[in-house]
Image (tube, rainbow, N blue to C red; front, side):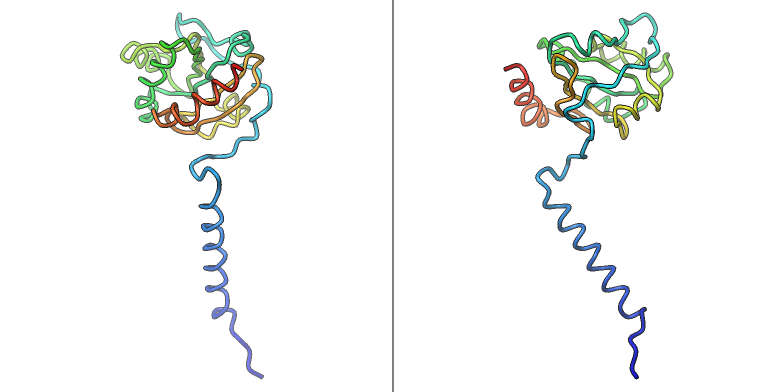
Length: 177
């Protein structure tokens, strides 16, 4: 009786399984997007620490009646530095941006804002546990909230001009109607 060795069968089967995962993964509607279980849910309660003398992020800000962004950032994060001018421009245009500084020293965070400007209506420091409640993978991550604090959208990675134009502005306009 002629038996086929598992060492002959396993590699091709493993290869085909991985190839199928890549193929179906690349055919998603948004291959750059990471799914978030928080979409459509209320923003978690804020568990924050004041950041120097800056106005703190508050629950009232999240449920103020206006559309707003909640941005998780850190001074040690290179992409946060890249997205910062875009957040400043959005803030200057009248959109409220709440900042949550992630696993950072207060001195470094305050220095970052002194150097680049402060786009935040309120900003506070958070720890890893609080970020996990929001479903944050890492910084930067930005959430779009409606007036009652429901999470409408999440952007993982820096807020770029492309994301503003193609995703944020349409979502903001839809939320304001």
